[in-house]
Image (cartoon, rainbow, N blue to C red; front, side, top):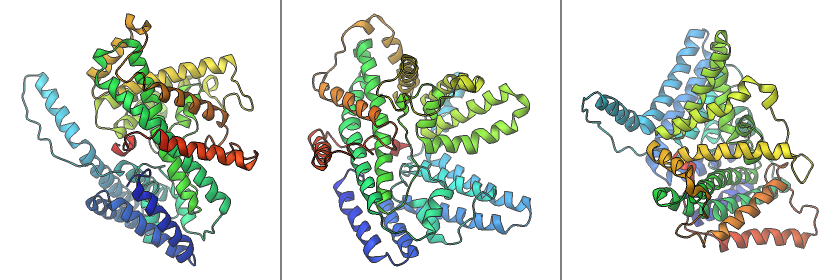
Length: 484
């Protein structure tokens, strides 16, 4: 059930009405409704996926209680490692079994040993990567005594399976989401209206920008050997806008939907394409994952390797980005993408004062300074280059794609099948970029757009966005991050 589907347009109002008009006497009954709704929402994809989640996360629920009850550190670690082993084991089986089996076979074939890799027809449960690391973060926080575990399994599953975020985040912390689920919630009109506005903007980003950019990005990447370098650059730009608007659009919708239930999720994107260096980019892109990796992977590794000083920091950074790449998918292209970002990030690691950008670019101004513009241009270009590996089906295609970019044909006029029809998408993407720039100091681009304007003008903007959603809707495409 996609957020941009008719089924969800019927599902959401039903849950909303039950939540505020039937179950509104007690937050426990509201949580029960959220669990039931979330289970239905998730089971629609495949009821077997729901079974995997319920069994695995029930183990984490009981493990956290045992961690608190345990008198010795050894016993606490046993329950922690049990959760780590089961969660990572399930994730590796569903996501990486065939990847590692094929890679193992390929390594031996180099030395003349022909091993048959026994690939299995494994269906990856949707959202597995997201709810797995959310659950792991909760278990680790309990072990570190940073949060108190809940002893109410309904509250726990409302936290783990909350339907707006279960498929693709944001990856929430217990200190934020679980805390809100354990207190009474009252309907707040202003928060609900803000949520609807954010849902609208998320739909625009997904349907108008991402889905249309996907058509042309797919055309160029599938037939890259037929096109000029300039066309391939344009194709990479199409994917750059596609992946941002697809995923940040989903996040906007998820956050907006949660606001309808007076639940506030963390911001997941903070206008990352206006970053002035890669360090800032990773503080603004997929914030929930980046901060999770920093807190649970990089910092522990950095502490354990602190005797190695700069080399230890480099190794911790490299391993963190490689894990990030592998988390995104079972393909060597994602590992290369992670390694590239490690190289990009090194100046921020070795010279933190010089490469630490605080605040928003050109804060309080309409135009950036020449320095900010140059830094944003360099950071954006490096990001686009790395996205080529992220999008390519294999390393050979990525290398071939890049080698054709850096040729004489780079100076030609872009041309591909459908170039004329793509003009409207290019213009809309440019308009979108302007709106994002003007709203970059807010939680999302249109959070304050027209708030002080005459009401009919403000509503005209909203209706304009709705008309654009219907008028420029292309073939419905699944959210990119569902595959991760």
